[in-house]
Each structure stands twice: as C-alpha cells, then as structure tokens.
View (tube, rainbow, N blue to C red):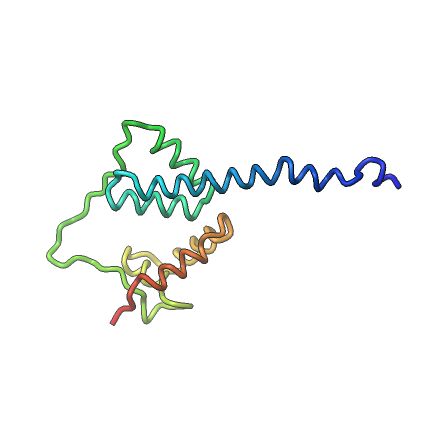
Length: 147
C-alpha cells in the first residue's frame, strides 16, 4: 500500500521523461563526434588515434575529442616522428603468441611490449566502454596473419 501511495506508476514515466532522452542524446553526441573525426582534416595517424579513443572510451572519448580537437581551432595533432629505416615494420596477427586470434600478440610484437600488458589493457577497455569486443573483431578481420 505504501508503494501505491508514493510510487504509483511514476517511476517508468520518470525513466521515459528524463533518463531515456539523456541516453539518446549521449548516443547521438557519440555518433556525431565519431563522424566528425572520420571527416576531419587531421592526418591519418591522428584520425586513427582519436577514433580509437572515441571507440574505447565511448562518451568520455567523444567528450575529450570535442574539447581538445573540435572546439580548439589551433589543434595541430600529435607529432609522431618515426625513424626511417629501409625495412618498415608491418602489423600482423601473431602465430606463436596467441590466445584467441593473435591480435594482442601481434601488437605486442610490433611495439616490442609484452602481449600480456596489451591483453590486460584490452580487457580494461572492454569493461570501461564495451567497445573492446567490437574492436577486437574488426582487428581480427583487418589485420593479416603472419606467414
């Protein structure tokens, strides 16, 4: 009886009135920043870095992109200097150091980092934003296996 007096069907109405529009606006903002990043005039490396930030950190990554890149007219991007060698490194899925598809092992071999650290970071990103599984599947499709 107490519940009927103080909460008579108002809670679902409250969800529909306030929480659902907030979730929809958050999703639209995330999609807007994702599309803006893809169509921006940043160089390829900076686009890739910001796309990964937006995908892995969802709303927080989109908010960071909006604050640091979109609203900042003087943003020039990350300056990444690479050594010029005759032989360039290529990213491959590892055959030897694999748990599922060799993605984390290949990234670890590419950057000379222990793949366990990459795996732990990947799991952390998966639980933080939920995009880790989708990103792993995309990497599984896109990154070729080492021959």
